Length: 247
Ligand SMILES: *Cc1c(COP(=O)(O)O)cnc(C)c1O
Image 1: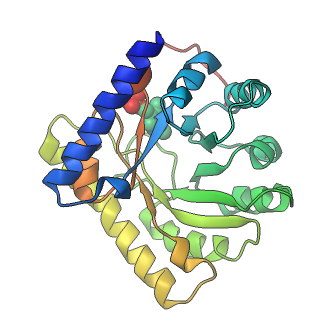
Image 2: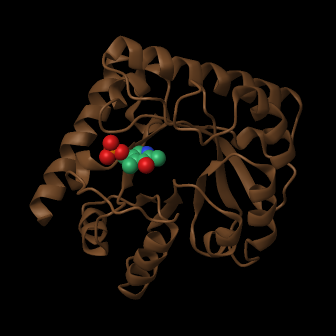
């Protein structure tokens, strides 16, 4: 993708975020933009970074690690990498050593491994619990019933900082239905945030992030209360179909 296309797309997406915030009396600074660069080359990440975009999300760990390494060499300082795909046990070490955020935690075992393996010279790994709020066919994510117990246990892990929730609701055909499923996630987020703050759990104050909304539904997500939208095709263009990859 050309540099000017990425720059234009970033401007359009930013404008959509600003408009959605204005419509809902929210400050645009409340909503972070995560650029989802999966399937796109490191050169596209570098282009977006040159436009001022710092946070990037990758689904496939091997692919993400390759880009992280490439851009480290290229001296792109200030990049922040989010793992937004499933993390298997045998990948936790490379994730703990190379990513800044992991948004997809749905099991305590993975959280424990990430905490144990996070190098001491790095800040705590910033983590979100992925919640499967609508019981959708996309089966990743903790159930709403599991989330509280998982959050309480994770808040004790020394090398993780639990920052909030992430969800990938099933695609919905209308704005009203998008809003409805996003509000389900927001309700879980609010009750969890309240419980954690009242329990004075370690780091409870940092529970401030709701990662919700993508290219097709970011307006509804912002209306529901998202604090981080994850946008791929809206920035980098359409993805070509992927051959199956192991995460
Ligand atoms: C691919 C992906 C996105 C971005 O999707 P777009 O529709 O391209 O914006 C966001 N979140 C996750 C978890 C993804 O896998």
